[in-house]
View 1 (cartoon, rainbow, N blue to C red):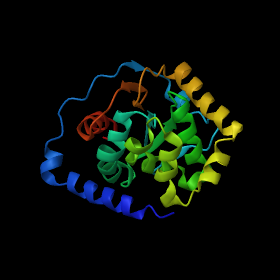
View 2 (cartoon, rainbow, N blue to C red):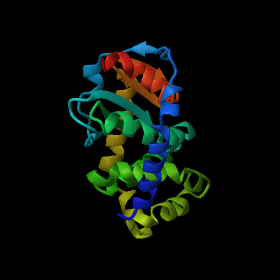
View 3 (cartoon, rainbow, N blue to C red):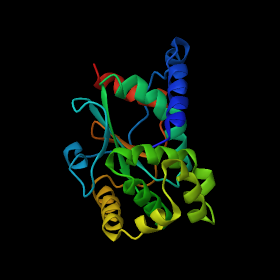
Length: 215
């Protein structure tokens, strides 16, 4: 699917973020977690193929994100590229994205990402985050059609994907499990080493959280 230009832009951002001056600015103290959970329960298999990136032996970092959440879009566009380069690509972290639908538009958008196929789901989610302001509005079908046009998805295909009740039910189950296990109160929510962090985390925050775990 033709989304390479987007990925190239992110690589450039990641390279900039990994300069010595940037790394040296990392915060000394990690943010305080909101609560603690059983990491084994968090990592239990769900109803859909796991959206996991990185080495299986890496420290699991789970993000519960919503496609209509501006803070989640900010993380995807401005933090994830550098985080991926520093921790995921180096084998230190295994990043897991969990679809947390806050509304019907989230469900529909996630259904379209899943409809692209397992290997294309996460790149499509990144694309939708990058185009969030163009489709998360009062004419979402038109916006989603335009946003997904680079992937080759037609309007007919889009409408067909949105009729997949099995995937819709699975996405609803992911939210139910997250609420029961993690007690997600907002998006994004991160779970790292059995600790729950509510709200957006910066690269500096994540570095400070992971530093003692990766020793």
